[in-house]
Length: 343
Ligand SMILES: [Zn+2]
Image (cartoon, rainbow, N blue to C red):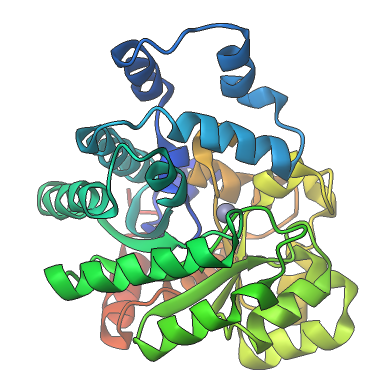
């Protein structure tokens, strides 16, 4: 068997915590800046110099700025193309990814249906062509208040009713966690669950364990985005272990936003894993953090000491924590095991 990089590259993977807008290549956003005459000035270079990101707040500012480049529905085709190219580079066959309509709708240039028509049709075509299957989780967002989140859910439900698509599988809660507790969004999540949508939430990324408790107890989130502050609360760790709630860990993202951990070697993913929690590896925002999924796995191996067998557990955890059917999961896993190390 070859080196670590080759081994990781050979593993067909899934990813369950990825924001599609932050998967856009610099070539694409520069093309959009040119298309709309967005000046390449001090402000734009500050917000697109992602190496300057030091906190979740600065990350979100850059996120919103890059999102403001999308002004016609067709622009979202660039997102589709870049997400699929990213998947192919990293041997990813299945992604459950967030799409965030709030900022787009607030600008008033593109409607919800136009945005999602482009994404849904684009990902349908891409799957036929490339085999990469991307399912969408609508980020109702905690950055714009409850009413906005309710509106996003209503639009999602109306869209699903109109189109009957199975490309959109649920809702998620992203955005600024400080000052926007999960508890505020309980009615949105209750309604989404009742409608049969999957529900996930970012929690414990920049707020303590109380945020994760709220996400599981009040929102009944099926997976937790990040959840790294759970390390501070033994009872919470036991609960997450008992229920095998998936933690969507994004190591590089956590190091860059620096809320709870500033170097990989100190990342709680090791402690979570050793304790028997269901941890998965993800990139969150590849373009913001200049990270690829293969590299995240390499880091987890080289800086946090995960063995090849343990990496395979992480890969399996990710697949088994998707919202695919049990039959599909088993079929994929048999194929993955046959493929690993043979590419
Ligand atoms: Zn995220």
